[in-house]
Length: 78
Image 1 (cartoon, rainbow, N blue to C red):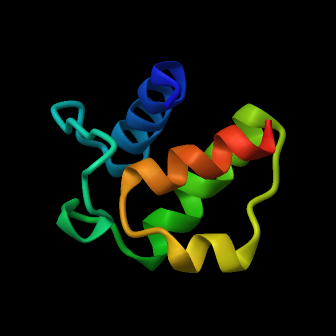
Image 2 (image 1 turned 120 degrees about the horizontal axis):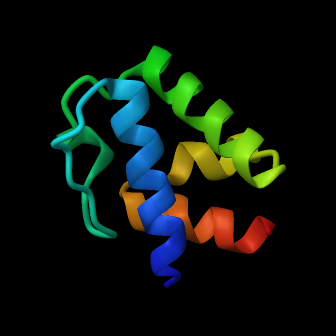
């Protein structure tokens, strides 16, 4: 997968969750990320959509189990 996308996802997640020490990789489960909730996901996805000029599909979002799936969705949309 694209390491640049992972780096950008990590950067945006850190900003939106106000946690500059957070480290994510492709296998990181969203359920393992402290403060990852319905409000934060809206903020994170909005920032990613703005950055990449994309729109996520609701069905894709529901199927994401880890950061790798999120990164793959971005890769597929750009």
